[in-house]
Image 1 (cartoon, helix red, strand yellow):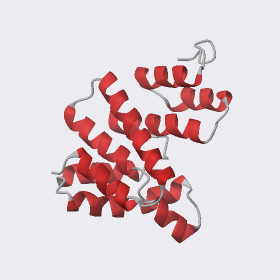
Image 2 (cartoon, one colour; image 1 turned 180 degrees about the vertical axis):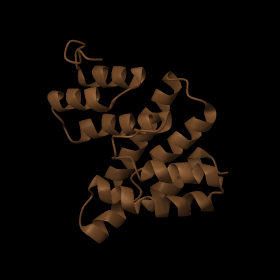
Image 3 (spheres, rainbow, N blue to C red; image 1 turned 90 degrees about the vertical axis):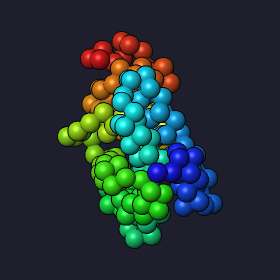
Length: 171
């Protein structure tokens, strides 16, 4: 299996010339890595999570070309195939490839979350999207209440966006 750095290098090459998307996946990867360490997740889950974080939006170019949209539903549909190709070329084990493809195919689906890797990927992606999309504090607070579950993700969201503990009173 290739190193994380080889994966990142492949992902950058895949998104060649698209600095915005490269910056996005690097930030999501960083948050996912941080939350996973703060939550003390097992090494095998960590590997799957950070792999998915690097590749989570890999289908965005195909979505734009095929549907004229970067909507999450299209990213979920178009992402697993190129992710599988990249991971196979790098020698990732089939069980890791399957889980990463599942996570990519669900990274904009906020119900029936079936694992800590899935939960952390949702949280890391939102932490980045909230800033990049300049979401309001009210929208951030509502999303936090509906989707965030990890103590570390909630804390990072509160501190990053200055959401007071009073504003997120149900947490």
